[in-house]
Length: 535
Image (tube, rainbow, N blue to C red; front, side, top):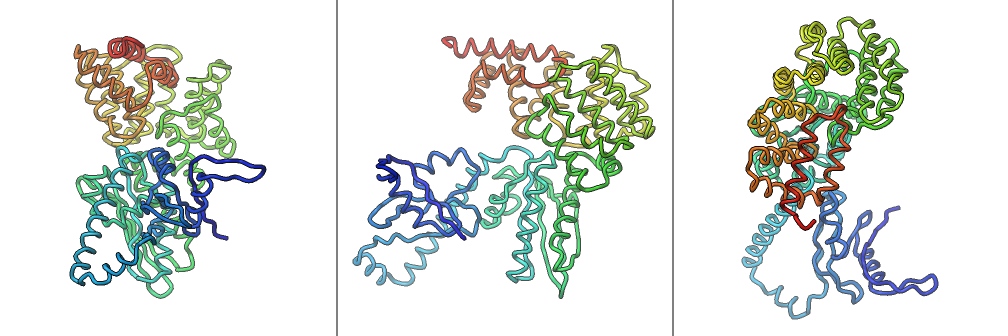
């Protein structure tokens, strides 16, 4: 069964079990106007939800159904639902006039109409993307169907939809939602337009062709700013093996993104070595993204999913180390059973080294955990061993950065962080914050400002912290006027206030809270008193 839904807001009168009034009547008319399987809204509902959702809307204009006039909008659940409805209230005279318009004028009007509609469409797409996409973003374009048949078009859509839905939760990049991806294709924007006008940094595009009972898919991962091809994928499948094709293309596309942009080749190989089964590899990637993509989601039971992974892999060095690292992170927000948890962390680190003495990351984690517990300088032998074995592995480097952080070796934090971000330009925001803190600790405000500026616009989480520290750094440098302006803009755009902002900063699981976070809070309070003295 296919349903139609009409949604309206308005006054309603209830008598017994019946509802009356314009609120109900317009909703009923919208339902009648709606396409099968679609949703239509009144203008009042559209204005309420437009800026609060990621949906696209199609403006149908003023409509008249059963003597009820109203402005209607379709929710575009799929690009194919876009339609134009002619208003049926045209008078006989107007209709006659339309019939006698010369053909040439009609043609010119059509050209103008299409041009203006295209401009309107571009504006709507631009506004929508601006609200839903921020920073380093990947667009997975719908595959180009080079066979022309409807069957292959459906195959193309199935593969495209699967790539978008399956990859988005496993990589540290923003992925353009499915609906916007099809809209951009329909609007026929060039790669340069997508990059310069809509802020998309990377594109996976490709084609699908058929020959007898087989089909071939060609994919390219392209960096739009330089137009460099970062990776290519060419695979051939049987026509009756859609699911197999989806799985293989998903795996290869994800690997290309991880290897080139967010994890690095050596780290990908590290996780493939310890988690060769696709299901476990994907689970580990999802857990990592959940921590770092939208902010750090450490919780009182943060280590539990890693414990479950470990239960299935008790002789796996990588599983023991994952559990150790994440139980350690859990301690940042759950300060209960501290001695037992510390003991379990150390046992898991030791077991990881015992099971695989070549697990470089384990020595880096051991060094960091030792520095945290003893509050002394970093064990150089452990760090050197880690770097000699896995200095090109971003995950090893992230553990070394943590070790230097707890050892208060700020120059080494900065040096190692730079190497980390050379390997993975779009790695963990948490590590940029650590590097920023080290610049501040060394009194290098310009270096700290450069890191903060790199964070702005990178993703929602990075953007938030980057802008906060830019406010702090302007205040610290004595430019109170600029600090005031940045702070006012930040409060307005984030729809927050100083009290809620301080709570959010304090709720971030810093572990041992760095002194510069306290300085940040103190500066924000001082600025707020200047900007909003009455509050």
